[in-house]
Length: 251
Image 1: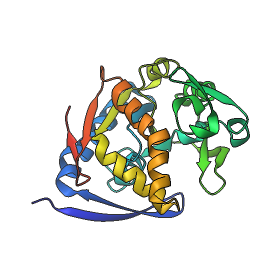
Image 2 (image 1 turned 90 degrees about the vertical axis):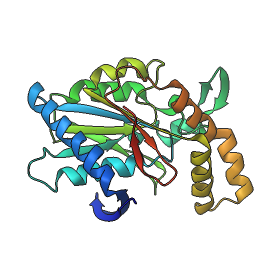
Image 3 (image 1 turned 180 degrees about the vertical axis):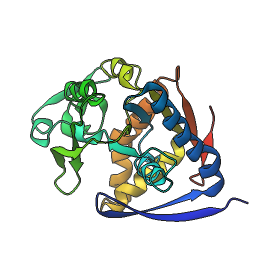
Image 4 (image 1 turned 120 degrees about the vertical axis):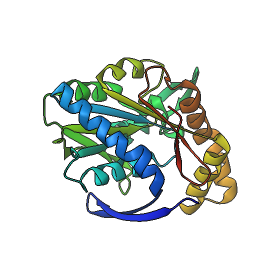
């Protein structure tokens, strides 16, 4: 029998609720924190962790939870969780430009969230500085539906960056993996993610029919790209999300 526990914690002033299997916390999450702490001590510098996963896996909440967990015990070095979404192009750019996605020219606003709608040069510049400077990090404001620059000051010795595309095999994403000291990939069954993503759109106000259409035109392509085109070589940790939302360590 799995023992589930609900955690309530604050992220940027907002309360978040997460439910995790206690056994997974003890056998996967806490050992991960110890491993990262040891790596940071060995390198004697700030370390960068990339966590990649398809949409709707729960990676943002997991990263924030790991940050919270690292602060609950003085034996751990604090983790700072950051998201990739602040590297979307700004909305005015997306609304006025096209992108070449899988060989097809399409308006960016139709495919917002795919790799081609990210400012990878801005990301590269931040990653080049992050090891040696307390830089400022952008966020994506979901009320404004736009990027807000320089909102989070990076201050901790272990930086955990989450995003769909961080481990893509294709350039320019592939070459940016040189900045990561530790790489985590999370997998999940495509059908499970489909239902989650459709449900998410319905909660956002779309009809079932509209939500299914959005999934087919946008989300499904992103899910497939992450699952099929993320680098699995040189991973430090591979996790699989189960139907019950538990995390199974594969590697």
